[in-house]
Length: 94
Image (cartoon, rainbow, N blue to C red; front, side):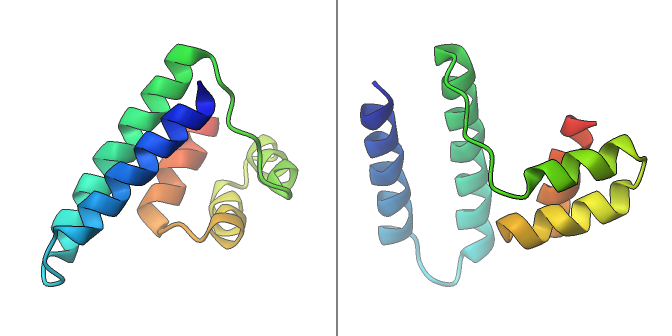
């Protein structure tokens, strides 16, 4: 079931990039964010937990210590996500 879901997501992302003009990066980013939210909802519905990245225990520890900004920095280093996405994720983890 998970492999089918993953395959569907990969196909959607591939199509998204294949049919979008290169000048519309913001549109692609917005559409990709929508797809990520949908995949997250599907995983929640199926009860499938996303495996944690190595090093995430440091992020959790910083959150417990009330060092949210440091937690965001570490999360960004681990994932490569942008500031807004990392902040939103750390906020959800709090």
